[in-house]
Image (cartoon, rainbow, N blue to C red):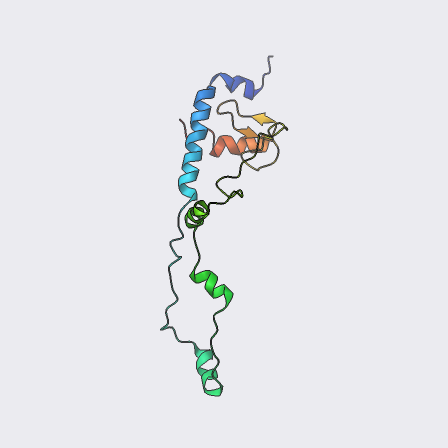
Length: 153
């Protein structure tokens, strides 16, 4: 009776990508994330309707009238800038000081750290098909069920 692991038996059936395909797949995934990442807030320009009744204010108006003062929070909300506006403003400043666009750092002297694509913990294993990292058998199962080669290059 010859016993063998199901993992070894199914190894021939798995699709294995070469390094170029893996890099192309990772680049496409990053581009998709970048497209999802930066958008202006669609609700940033919404203003509360002034027609909404404020019942508590109606009761207090007869007693005394307060002078409305604009707080720092109101000014921050009214004149809020998005990230692109801040970058443009930063580029216009012609100072020798490092800013967001000019800040750079050299390569690290320590080796790269690898993290699990499923849970984020440090990982030591890679998927044989796509090269994605995982840390445990449970994360491997989740990866194979939901992520592995779903977005092929």
